[in-house]
Image 1 (tube, rainbow, N blue to C red):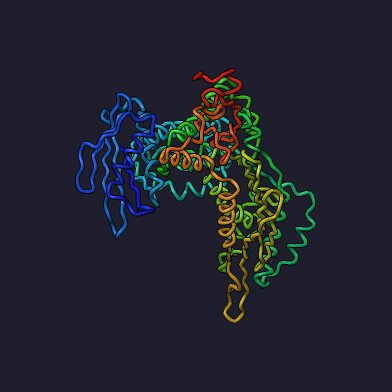
Image 2: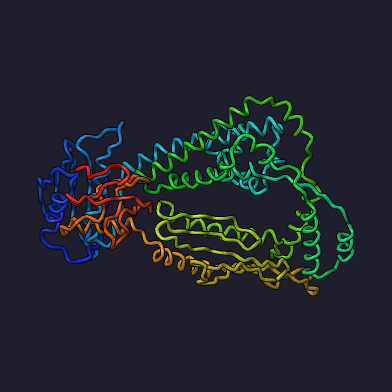
Length: 559
């Protein structure tokens, strides 16, 4: 069953609007053999559509709610096959939708069993592949570090996440309360964080600076100075830490190629697209399925390499590594207690950076996700860093137009201070706009009269200009990177509706295989694919006027 609704017509509907629109669809579409209205009621039409030897039944209802007209479509095949994908039904639903869509303000997709079928098939594969990586990490870490590897070699934030979730998981599945479920309880995206974790150790060569800071601390010092001194100690200790063990470089890189991280990030995005019940068309299904197969192939190769190695040698070498230095943990714990007493958070440089990083990463991901299925543009993203960096680069395959978002970071970790990230929007190397997001650190003071600390300022994060930048980027994308595929669809519709020449050749693009090769220079240069931007070499037949591939044949196939 395919069920969708057109809402609010752009113009007043003629009395015979449905009949005439179906008549035009039947006359202009080469894919449809016949369209017949076999039953008509009051604002209701029952239609049979023939595509060769296959029949499909379409019900159309015209309803009015709050003075707004709704045109309801329900489409289903004569014969339902659960084994084979009905490609003709897929083509027909898009054909009917696109044919009517131009006359209405909105189209709302209600039910699509084909999209649901795509999601059901993909999610089964996704579940199996992501659990395969969980299994691989578990086995490698247990054989390398022993059964207690979780406590020592997992980032602190992931251990906290597991602690918050595991009771809920245990209560749902009481039969598995005595089974280790740590890797199952964390998000798919977090698996890579474990594989990339770096274990650090203190490496202090000169204690003079620490001794000076300790001498400055007094028992009745002001809260701001006291916190600042402790911050300086912790930051000094952090800066004196060296990487003792890089899990990716020393362990997991032996089993995976350099492209695996990028492949896994792409897999996680696809996984979330399916898991969050977003609509899937055939192109999205193929793209996500390809991503799953890439990860599955990488995991199979990794297992073969791991199982062929003598685990005793590697285990003997890695057992010499000690735990993270206890002194750092104790210092961080003391700082946390002190900040709880003041009632405010006075964050260090790294924590402030992480607040910016989380917000900006989410912002960049939103822009990228909105363009995920655009084949006519290239998108490059880079991680948010302290240094000036191009965070986002979008380049058109049609005309090389380029849009960039560049960051500049200024962080001040003192109490009651402001930190900021300046984001510049640059189009073709010309600055377009500058937007700033700000974080204000907390502050506190010791009140002698009442005997405890009171806050002087609270933590604030002001990201309003990030929303403004998002609007500017979306507007720029709409203007600079027009969706020629949508423009071509509109032109094709008008050509069919008014009996004009089609704007596309009766050929498939050599690069993407889509039927979007332009022969209308008012939209794109002749031979340019509206879907992917590839320039196909075409020649026009002097006899019949049809276009053909110059590098495939010497004359038109019709002649």
